[in-house]
Amino acid sequence: MKRVEVNHQKAAGLFTAIAELNLIDFFNRLPVRANFFKIFASCLFLIFSCSCTKCDTCDICDTCDTFENEEEQTPPPSGGGGNGGGGGGGGAITSNEAADMFLPHEALPHGVPDGYGWKKKPVIEYGAKMHANFKKIIQWGQVYAEQSLPNPDKDFPNIRVHLRNMKIYIYQKDNTWKVLESNAGIGGAHYVENFSGDVNKPAVIHNEPGGGISAQAGSGFNFHFWGSMQNVDPNNLKGCFVVCEARLIGVQGNQNPKYILNVGADYWRDAGLPHSSVWSVPSGAPYNVAGLGMGRFKYVTTEWQYFSFHTFSESEMKSIKLPSFN
Image (cartoon, rainbow, N blue to C red; front, top):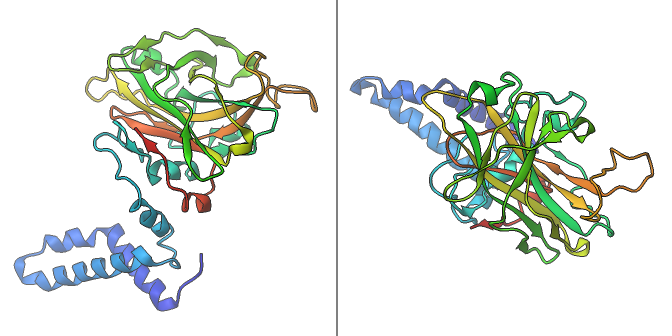
């Protein structure tokens, strides 16, 4: 972003220092005779807060445009939400979910090699660049043990990850959204954490009251889950947005299994052919699956929150009205 004049920088730095040191809280604890300091601190807060909401130049306002865009959206749903995610229960997808694609993971998945690009941050692979001979798309997700706690399934046998409302939205050439899947079932299996040889085994999946499923992960295996494959027109595709809700169930007291989760999507050439990607076939050989990418790993908490993936850049996101998640 453009640099501002020195005086503006100094003022912005002063405001940042006040916020970091929590001086306003300090002034609020002063006796009545120190009201002058309270007024001074409040004035600083108001002046710089107001100036930042419209500023497109200063370094402490990188998200100003995002905040202005939020005002045009439906307010986020009430209740739930944690670690940067929106609350559960329907409503609009907010810029919180959109911004997750531009942030590093909250924690790293256990058993994933450092050479895998998606281990440390979200990735966009093919994104919206769908080949003409690929006509299908499927959304998926994965639950992992966090690196520091590899066996949550054994350490916390009663705690499970509850999943629901897994959907995929297609952004069309006329700048409208089309939901390809709503209230469909979620399937899945345990895959070896590094996906070596595509080794997998059946998972113990519970159908939960009120909708959705639950499962566990750990002991060398993730829980890889997916929706149903859908048709998509490659000539009417500008991007996509995948979203799923998740929470922990069965938690007692301060138990923390440290499950993490992310979601993504794949293009498929033919649902009747085996899973073969460009990375698993000899160079130049035909393949059946092309990944769009995958989103940010976030901790699953006891509150419903959204986990998301999309194919847009930060600049594109500022001009796109996000879909309604009802």
